[in-house]
Image (cartoon, rainbow, N blue to C red; front, side, top):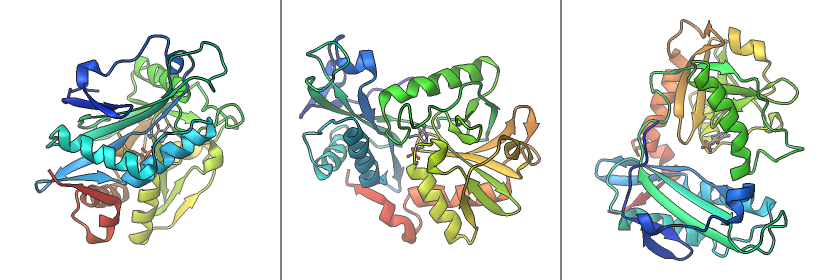
Length: 306
Ligand code: PMP
């Protein structure tokens, strides 16, 4: 994973501030209790243009996450979308980048009632390449289970949720794997530490449903659409752990991970241990779609004039 690459400006609470001056107090509520919600969005440079992938859907999810935690964002969805576009422009970004909007409870009161703490909103954009190895990853099933929805709703992309992912990721890395796969509390496959998961069996695709405590990924939805358009059947249903070991192909989807083939799980090769043909076909189509090469998926892109 690469270190952050600075850009010039970060937008925070209504102002564009120089990158190094976008700071918050150490007694910020969200720092102590995880009371924030955020998004990760990619923008792609292609033929001299910047395309933001599914901007509106990401900002809508941000608002839904905020609603779950009674956080009233003092801007509209349209305003936040416009600020993202403006931020890309003022930073004069001319390469693939990642956009990180965050809404969090700020400074003012200490203790678990967050309702009197101010809502702060910040957005950063920075150059970003691959998150996971593009050739594919070796995974383990984590000993940590995905947080169940009756304890913390995984459908909210909330800061505090990620402590669960961090435990699983560290465990995977320290055991010599690239990524963790978490099971839900019933033992069915849920998702990766920051990605949704698909398996391929006999030419059909399967992915865990919402009730397997996944974040409802925007890339996941895009892949369901692309795979269906390519004529594959896609099923959202609980996936047993052993199906991971015996499937023909498996891959992760996510904004950071994009489409990453899974080559091995708990020491078992998936297929012949290389990216499978269906994964490759879907991945190539996704990669063309995000760079504005496929007219039928231009609906997913917001062009930023630079
Ligand atoms: N699950 C988790 C836990 C994630 O953090 C992410 C990344 N946002 C995903 C799935 C994939 O979601 P998306 O495709 O919307 O990035």
